[in-house]
Length: 406
Image (cartoon, rainbow, N blue to C red; front, side, top):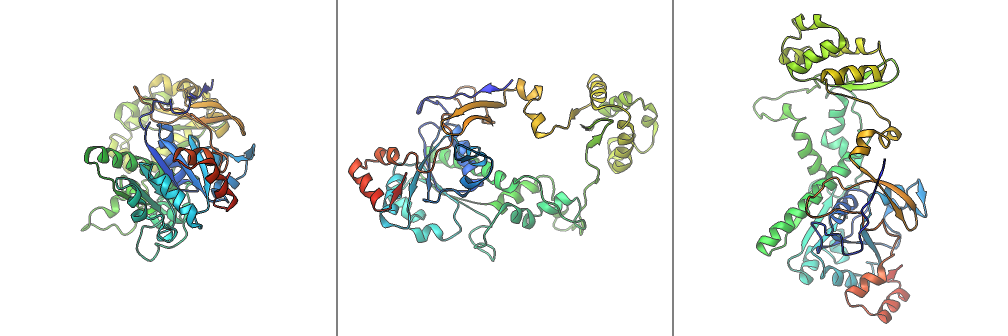
């Protein structure tokens, strides 16, 4: 069963960020995903686009003129299309920034200054604003001005080497754009932290975040042990095992993972292999780690004898951590996903019926909701300009002069 999304009237979300306005100049994935999370939590996110629109609008798998990827990264936003190369366009953006709490952009370093909407320009009209700059490699260094996409960061950060399993193995890319999405999650947390600091001090600040920063901080948590001790270098770091904890069964695949002695005993019971408890290679967690390849190979040999359903029933009865390995089409129908109401459906005025993941963090007092679907390019231009005091005649003149569109 798929849940119905909570569609609240505009301004009635009651989210934890209700009352905060975010001017969003970001494109692609990292910035838009970050601001969508903030919008899900109640912020008024105004997506400022060039007349050509966010590049993700051009993606495939479309309905009603909107690409699935754009819909999944830009809900709970309004769109205004402004030509920032015209002085009047820059003036309109600064006027909009004066009404905002957060200004976020992911241009390459130096671009916003050339456009006249850098931090100094924006802070003149809103001194306490939280100004956020996202980029690929940071503001200085030989790579600062390089064009960046997700695979480039996977390559430079060491992530591709980690995924390859060893520094001397062929590197591999993750089959998801982790650097983009991880940067988004980091950015959304940083924005809320900066807003909290402003609530306490009354002072805005400039938050700078690179994709390289985000991924390296993420990797250091668990994958950079060999680089941690300065005086104990590890020349080549390898994974403990090159065997994934995904096992083939008679008719498919399952995942099984055991850590504690209790779980190891339960696994041997479910596999009907009590002799493994006496094997000197496996008598302690440390020995099982040292002999991980032998242990995992033995488990794989046993699991091919029965179906996935048979093994999962046995493992669950014994208390062994396990799960089926699901395809994307199976995920949306799985009983746990349904029971948790993770997926919600809503009606988009142009794209039709949508299925999306709900906002992941759930608040017990304030609400998160899908108040509106992703906007058409410039769909709210007149509405937004009206809110900052631009009258109808002026809007008409700006449109005639090629300053705004929509």
